[in-house]
Length: 172
Picture (cartoon, rainbow, N blue to C red):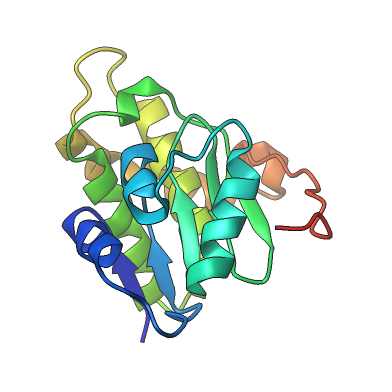
């Protein structure tokens, strides 16, 4: 069964000694501070490598929140979302993101893809929100419009989705 670990769950995980991989059905959603608690140091400038390392180390999907959100699978696959802006660095928005990941998993979306889809939809919802004064509680009401745009688009670029190849052979 898919599991999303956020906030205090990440803090508890940071204090635990893992003796076995968590599994790719688990999604960890750290921001930089939580990442540092989990690994002993912040992600640094190569956020893709940092997310890959953590995903490989714990055997779980890692959604590293930031200006470009990095979703890393334990096997090295990576998804990036560079939508959204600093308004998402406010209290509670990460909780909304974790909820969207969980909702997509509950709908049967594989956790790695659910994390990538959630990061994109969460950021696009913020793009639709207030330029100033956006709060976490505004995001759930904006998500249906984002999802409608995605399902109605005939191609990904029409919905604002850009794809780029990330070298998976790059070592962790």
